[in-house]
Amino acid sequence: MARPTNRYRVRVGDAPAFRRTITALVLATTALVLLAPLSIIFAEAFRRGLGPYLEALARPDTLHAMGLTVFAALVCVPVNVAFGIAAAWTVTKFTFPGRSLLLALVELPFSISPIIAGVAYLFVYGAQGLLGPFLAEHDIKIMFAVPAIILASLFVTAPFVVRELVPLMMAQGRDQEEAAVSLGASGFQTLRLVTLPNVKLALLYGAALCNARVMGEFGAVSVVSGNIRGQTSTLPLQIELLYQDSQVLAAFAAATVLAGVALFTLVAKFLIERAQAARAAASLEDA
Amino acid sequence: MRLSLGLSRPTVIPGFRLSLGLTLAYLGLIVLLPIAALLLKSADVGLARYIAIITSPRTLASFQVTFTTAAAATLFNAVYGLALAWVLVRYEFPGKRLLDALVDVPFALPTAVAGLALTTLFAKNGWFGAPLAELGIQVAYAPAGIACAMAFTSIPFVVRTVQPVLEDLEPELEEAAATLGATDGYIFRSVIFPALFPAFLAGASLAFARSLGEFGAVVFIAGNQPFRTEIVALLTYIRLEEYDYSAAAAIAVTLLAVAFVMLLVVNLIQAWHQRHTVGEE
Image (cartoon, rainbow over all chains, first blue to last red):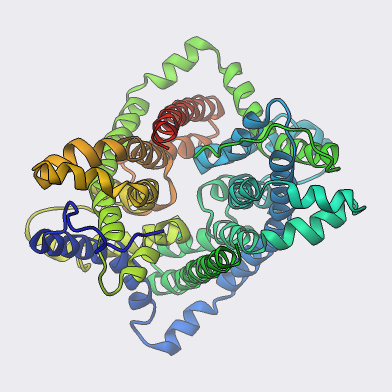
């Protein structure tokens, strides 16, 4: 929580001249490095007006890419929410040797460049990969097709939900779950009726982050997708294809959709943090 | 960032085997199997061939480009991130909440979209590119463009690691120093910055690690010329397209090793940091 800045008489950097200078510098830099890139997406997409924008957006290949991106999100978000709950339940409700190692493993995908993730998947499911001969024999196509896009997206977004849940569930401890169990609740009842309601907002935010990343993933997906237009292009890949073709308006139109998802995620974050702060304040008053 | 664990008594809660089993099975299939496959593939390359690939002029040049531009991007974010965290924690001004929300834009915005936006901004006739061209500075399709893309995608790291530490800083320390007659500059150097330093260093390391692996934003703006603006991640991609799988595996595993070293550094810094904060409480 931020302390009221005027409670203490002397604080470093409170001299008005210094405060104004540094605030102005930070705001100016932010306008250049954060606001300008965000604004230019919409400025370019709408530079010829709404009609051409919608036309550029409604290209069949862009619509197809959008569909594939939504499909990937519809598969990946529930899977990683389920994984997130299982992993967070494991590391916060139980004590066992190797717990820190497990948590480190869960976070591993964050430290790995998406390109490496893509290459690694190629060496599992590609023709030269570990399972390549087996897959070819049984005529199963994973690489350069939709399953590979899903798998690579799952890898990249695996930590998002866990990361939001673990600190919160750790802070909440296990007393409530232990009480529920000793009153006769089953494990699943405890999870559904005690644990999940307590972490609802964090779970929601984790899912929103996971969704934004699945929809926006570029590096890993570009290695494993094969990038066949109208077949295995997700929206970010479609943006690159359009840009390479000098279809700048169409590229920016497609980019507004993803920028919209990003802005929606940030608004969700803002609202969830406010709700959490209100909850914390309420429980402080109760106590 | 490492999350800390601190429970140690046995529990009556059921479901341990099921949840642990699910977690391990999923991690094994989605995370560990591909990494193992990459390690196996690169072991197949053989040491002599590995050294030849990594020390080839084009690979070395790509590592040099990547490290230099990532260092420049991190330097920018170290200064800007620290100033941003300071302004957000210490001052009240209109639009502060909006500024705080804007910090997360680079994490939420897909890298391809960021790359497209930055390339257009820095193009010869772009909002930034046109005035810069008059000064004779080229950013797009030059190493500076790569640094810009890396800087953009890693903005939140320093801010978000320094911000909570700055918020928890005891005002009494500053007050005492000021009462003893120390100047603001002296208090910042000797009281505030040392307290922030571990978090600052961890944030900068995370930003650097992220910059080393960044691909989406960079490929748009880099121009991707071998020896000049070709980053390691892109070279890996090109080797794959040429069906040179041993080269791709060798380069990818090297980048993976660098990522692990960075991860280790960040964890050591944070362990050090935790010892510091525990000591203060």
